[in-house]
Image (cartoon, rainbow over all chains, first blue to last red; front, side):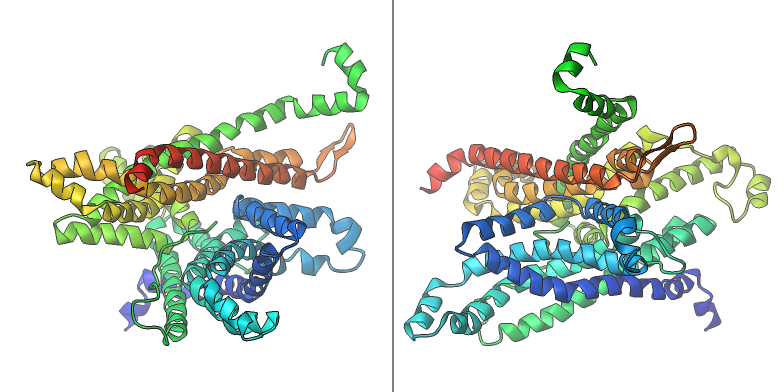
Amino acid sequence: MDLFWNNPFVGDLRTLFVPSLFNLYFAFSSIPIGFVLAIAMALLRQSRNPVVSRLAGAYVYAFRGSPLFIQLFMFYSIALSLNLSVWKPNGLDVFVLNPLFLGPFVLILNTTAYAAEIFYGALKAVPRGETEAARAFGMSNLQVFRTVTWPNMIRLAWPAYTNEVVFLFHATALVYFSLPVIDEQKDLMNKAGELFERDYNAFLHFSAAALYYLCISICIFSLFGLAYRRMIRHLSPGSAPGMRFAPKYFR
Amino acid sequence: MPDWLTGFLGDDVGFWLGYITNGKHLAFYSAFRFTLGAAVLGSVFALFCGLGGAMLLRSRFAVLRWIGFAYANIVRGVPDVLFFLFFPLAFEQAVEWVWAQRVCSAEDIAANTGHWPPCPAANWFLSTPEYFLLACVSLGIVYGAFTTNVINGAMNAVPSGQLEAARAFGMSDAQVMRRVHIRQMWIYALPGLSNVWMLLIKATSLLSLLQIQDVVFYADRLGAPNFLRSVGLIHPDWRWHYYLVLFIFYILVTMASERGFAWLRAKAGHGLVAEEG
């Protein structure tokens, strides 16, 4: 048993447990908010008002067309330059400049764009006949959305959205490369890098970190897969596309 | 700055024109060669890795299929930045280890345990060109895993009648693969490849993590608050201006590549549409 605990790889896995919580925090603090905002953004993009839909489209294009790494740097430096004039006088600087706030903030902006693209695609693919039938029943717009559009959209978007969530989790590795590291607030990549600088054993430390990423990715994927199975349980087998670990969109 | 131009534009514009064309800024502009070079070279490597990976995935031997499957799935299962940092480090250490077997005496290695490299003589100092090349290769390996999937899917999409016809002509398996299958596959792979290219373009922003003095490095340097004791504060923190420029630069590159791929798709699909219609 001692031999097991003294194994350097097991030791690394134990050291990396707390850092992995930071990655999970970044991912799961931004996913729910990003989900809601993305649906709102997709609906705005479908709006009849050309100004609104153009603006939403431009937002999605800009955030999908540029690297998350640059976005993190950009928002951090904007926050820094507003520090003396806005944050500091109001006593907000400790809060706003903290990576634990700024990291999820940028990730939310980013995932909103990517997920909005997915939901927009799904929104356009909702069968026209079903919405027309609902309207023919005399349903109001809200009722049509709630009973027909929404369930269809979520079901169509879910496999792609699962990939988006997995790759958002991967993207959390970038946060501490651009935002300041405060004390022991370190994520997997930071900690692996720190361990590497201690004894220069790249194979050991980076593969331990990689194992964490791999396992958590697989967990997310299978959890979302279970939810998907529930969503399509009323459909005949084979009529809905299966889940595949294949990203279409990511940073 | 010629005088007549300054007179024409006014002092302010003249100052700014001078500012953005000073030596440091010219170095900043020339650093874009790293970004674009890494994108081009990395995509070439990715294409080769992808073709190789797809060949492995479709191999007749189970062991090779497993290797291909492991490559495509493990590399996609970890963040690109992890692999991007890991590969150059691991490669450097492997070379140093092999070199140490030749140049280091046993006493040297024993005296130097717990340190890297095994002995000072085996130290391999990497400078920018080597790091750049290693970065391109690791981009190629990471995005090669995505390309593997794209190419494998495209090869499945090639109508089986074409392959059967080729076989009926008496071509060997290798000939069918080389002369028909791979050539017909490109049109189906193009949408997926354009996706991978977009990802790769965005991943080139990570070059500064490997000590390459790329645009992100210069944006940080040039924008940082500039203070000279003899003059005082020259400019405060201007970093976000520079990052905004990079933000827009990447959006423009994305736009241009979208146009490029749309053109390519129209051109490559020329015969195909007529065939279907």
